[in-house]
Image: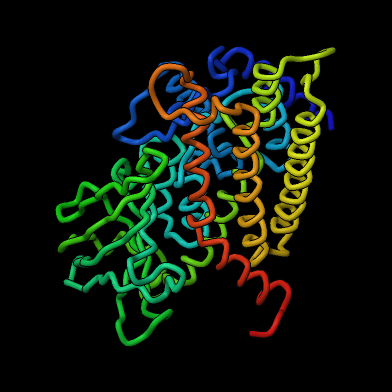
Length: 396
């Protein structure tokens, strides 16, 4: 216990000295999110400074092994770190599919050489990854994918198309499911990593109602991929794919906990801006009730996630439960934005032009963007089917 208290004190002192002032304020918009990568630009130089300082300690991924650039913290130490970050309202230094999805899969399935090559750049935010899973004819039935990787001796030749590839136009590398055996379905899929700047790769953004283009169509035409970039065994990629989907659904479910422009704190602040305050509280009793309910649901969800994560670390596994969290987390996130629009009233109808602040326009567009949460990472319908069959054991 004494050792943990010393760790807390040291951590608190380091954070106070190294977390820049602007990194202790809520994000004004989703544009403030730090994704890293070769193409990264930073509106605020302190965001890059915060990333570099946290990465130098491995605290962008506190529990990853130090051998791969992580912090090497124990469960208790990480809990202390997270509580100290919350105490000073620190922003996340890095958002990364490499951290949330690919990294855990590499730690479990990659060779030592691959771990040494790919994990440290993820920790430092040097490589931004995207996911090549869904295809025009293989969405809910992911195992029906047709993108092929042909064996050409010292490399694979990849041809095909992916769709709904999040931020493919901004990513540096892709982790991609490909078919390496056309005679089998699940047992004919492999897991490849390759550079998005490779000749033959083209990403086309898909325009959405929110005005943003987070998703892309991605085309591969005779893309050469070194055989050393095959993760796991040939034709055994489906096992990795399923594991990674669990990590993805865990990540998306975390949206329900709220951060940045959609956090519980910003809900209260927003409500006070539009409805005023009385004795330090939001003036509208009805609105207070809605905000409290959202916070209670979020707290219960966070505690359930924490309990299940601890059980998984103890060897009990999460498995199909990730579908429960993905479904509930995305619904909670959508409800949060609905509440923000309720607070803003007619000011939530702005899209551009005079009469609306940047924050109001940003919230409205984020509300529209949140609708995609029900699709990405597996549709809500797919998650409910998984829960029905694998958790409740209901008959087909």
